[in-house]
Image 1 (tube, rainbow, N blue to C red):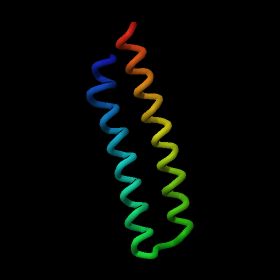
Image 2: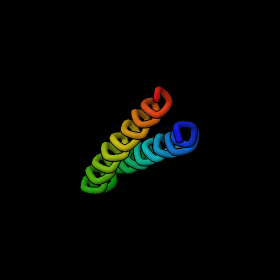
Image 3: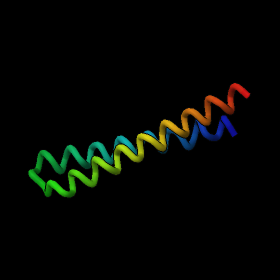
Image 4: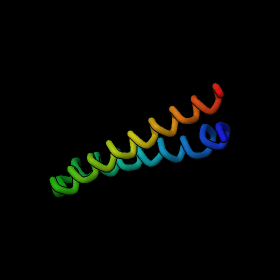
Length: 64
């Protein structure tokens, strides 16, 4: 389980965070809707939380 989390799920979570971050930056540079930027920022924070939880579970599973 630890291997699956650390080699497959965690990189997907990190990539999702990076994608939402890039979408937010593109929206800001193009002068897009402020509410869209706010929603993307909230989504990014949520995805970061999920990525950290996955990382901590993987570390816990490796140490077990």
